[in-house]
Length: 212
Image 1 (cartoon, one colour):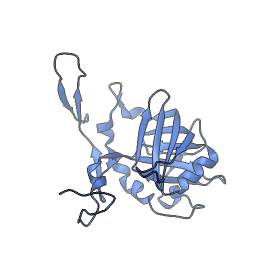
Image 2 (cartoon, rainbow, N blue to C red):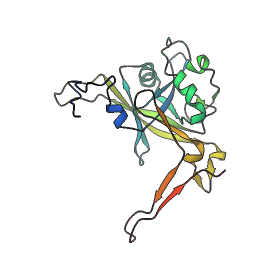
Image 3 (cartoon, rainbow, N blue to C red):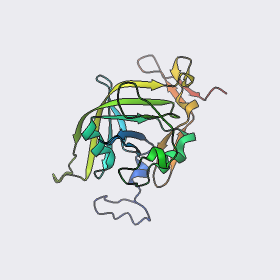
Image 4 (cartoon, one colour):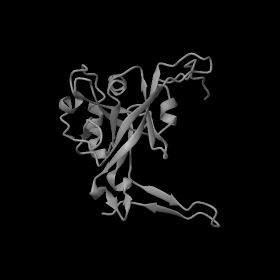
């Protein structure tokens, strides 16, 4: 089949584009309202965009509470979403009034951050403490601004549970980090494939699985 996204002429029950651009990392973003209410929401348009400086971004389809909070307070936290937390991640996607905390509605324990005010998810094995840099509004080829808001932040602090470090590495396979796929689907990262970078006369490929 072939279709044009702008025309939505795929003829399928659900648009397949996000099922193709997958898996997508999940930014489980915690922020604070100006009044100090802790907000927590997952975003599947999320990634790291620079190492020096350490920049991450997440994109909100429509102006959500996270955007308003971050622009007002200048801080947020990216919490690592793992398989054992998938139901909590899903619960925090529910719409709730801005003065209600998803930490409370989803019964999620919070822990204090070191360098920013928003709390992190206590059960998340890793968290990135971020300072807001800018909001970018993308445009389509016709120049019309999309109803999308890309929030960029600089990572100023990184929390890692010591138990997540195995052999000097953060063991993502052992943590079973989850990613967003299409439709209602999630995927755990539970197996890694390692390749040596060229040059080197060929690439070695090894499958790595968690240590039991």
